[in-house]
Amino acid sequence: MENLGDILKEARQQRNLSQLEIAEDVCSQSTLSEIEHNKYIPNTQLLINLCKKLSIVFDDLTLASNFKICKEKYFNQKVSSFYRTQDFLQLRIFLNRPTVLETVQTSKQTQAYYFYLAVCSLKLDHKFDEAKELLKLSLASTGHSRKQSTLTRLGNVALAYVYASQGLKTSALRQIELSLNNFPKTAYEENLNLVFYIAALSYFQLSEFDSAMEVIERGIHYIMENNSHFMLINSLYLMANVAEMVKQNNAQLAIKNYDLFTAFLHERAYESVN
Image (cartoon, rainbow, N blue to C red; front, side):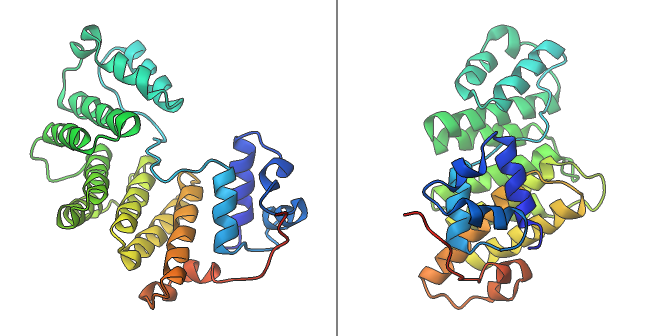
């Protein structure tokens, strides 16, 4: 992937970290500089280590843009602020305030309201059963429309992740299929990038590595075709972890035919500082 270095550099700069800070205990600064100037594609383990230093996490449910829970501008701004700063405790407290709850009126607002509560449950308590019920309430608010909104796709794929985390393979696969069904070719929204990522993460949880890699590649191409970087570094991090699992298990999988995966089969040694 020719511009991987640009992506890593952008992620580092967004976090206000220097090359020296990221390279510490991982590789030499000169190696990182080579990577950021696209002179060297890191192997999977080096990419994983760099992403860890960048604090990239697997269960990232960050939104590119937030959904409205009511008609009150101030309340929506508070939700957006808490979510953006990942202050899920304050977000849950805020959402449970009677003055906020009584302003939630439309089906779209109700759907967003329960989606946010589900994410709070996952992030704060890791309570999959509670999150599952909240996501079901969110999805139940959509009515019977055949056309899925972005939030509906996110609800379906988040539910897939919950099922996968509980080892409920059949249910997880069904929700993944729903989230990706008739994926829109127009009307791009950056939040749709997250659907591909969580779908791939769910496959990874189920050790369905072929499917995980296929969806990651679809997601990366989708992101880049739309000139976006949202969830791109996360997708590359997940791809590297899938590649490592395949190599560790000596798995002979069809994913080796994927073009982006092939780029990570480089095993050139790098100068470690350990």
